[in-house]
Length: 221
Image 1 (cartoon, rainbow, N blue to C red):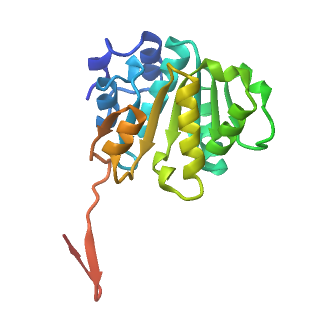
Image 2 (image 1 turned 180 degrees about the vertical axis):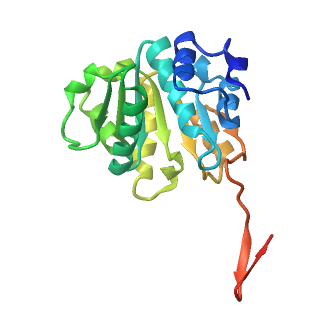
Image 3 (image 1 turned 120 degrees about the horizontal axis):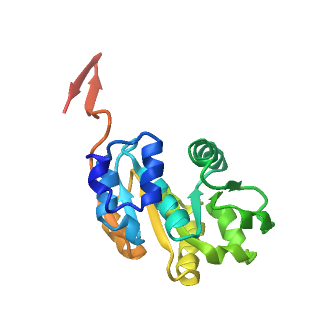
């Protein structure tokens, strides 16, 4: 769908950044998220296939938090390697618009330098540590992106992520939460727990066919 059709729903500065990056159209996950209240600070749970455009939904929420709400954004990922990857991507696309930092190391440090940054990319364990160290800039966080939120069901990382979400919702009454995942078995239940609107779609850039391989042949279903 054409980006211009949503010009009235997107804050001017956010729209300008999108145009500068060359965006002309929006994918289903993106315009459905806008319709669901992305720019009205609604909590969203976005469950769409890999490469369907979930990351841009997160980017729109981040831009809105920084430019429109005048606050900070935190992008939470499960792994340090993924944090580094996201940091490089965001730095490349938005490094000239706002300050971006990564914090995924020592969990015994409050990393006070983060006060100076607009977007902070971190892991759930590190973010939990920052909250427990009472980092004073936490009060300025307007949106938290939870990438791979289905890991709530993971025995090793799930408990920390669940506690983190619970603490954040109690600590920041006006916080917007954006959960992203391609694989959630119970999206309605999770959306209800998050007090979030569920955004679902099956569109993907490359068609996925399923089949059975046997005796040198594939029979597609």
